[in-house]
Image (cartoon, rainbow, N blue to C red; front, side, top):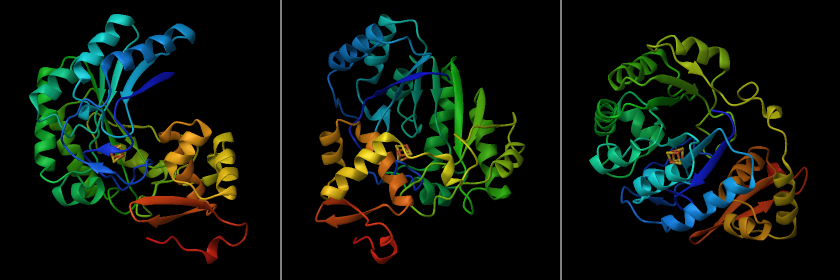
Length: 308
Ligand code: SF4
């Protein structure tokens, strides 16, 4: 969608799912309860300040360090941001709460809605998305079908495909059947190119995604982020990664410590930690309810194990 200004409306990491492919790490608060996490006027002031001081983005995306529709003031926020700018507003959501008429009404204020659908049967849904208790694939699908009926804007359905789990033609065909019921304007196939915390979330090669895309109607677009899926060299080590590693060589830290100490966004920190962990440069140690990150000494990575 071009240059996007992301507006994060939930704390790290509050979500209705605990997807095995999530780049943000394990869900800390698994819930379906909607909460007014932040005052709308504070978020608005931040957005306004940003828009005044930088070149205009192509789109403003409501997303977050979890599921944005858990923010109970979402409708008010979208309406207020619309009053500030004519830049299109997008909502990046897992779609799990669309069975709630309030969520559908609030979401319909956005110009583009991008829900996800990663499974075509209940067993795979529970395996991949690990939803909050009570959420079922049938309920999620019915919510999305209802939303399509009520919403005239653009819906882009994102399907995350995982090697050995959902790249099986029968399973993809089941997802495609549900997608036909939802009738999105477009279907995007993705795969977890960037490192994740769960080793079961393995990316699918681009060519395979292109074959699976044909099973959808309309044919899905392959939108894997960068380079060849699974190619670690496609993701270069960023300056933030270097800073985090340097800090962890001095002392073990929690992700929150790192974010506060280096002035980085918690989402960026979690992504960098996942990448460093995949490369064997950091490991986690769980102490009580806290997770500490340690740098591995060069060449000794294979000798240390995470303590869980
Ligand atoms: S829905 Fe998104 S934020 Fe929530 S666990 Fe899944 S990938 Fe992570």
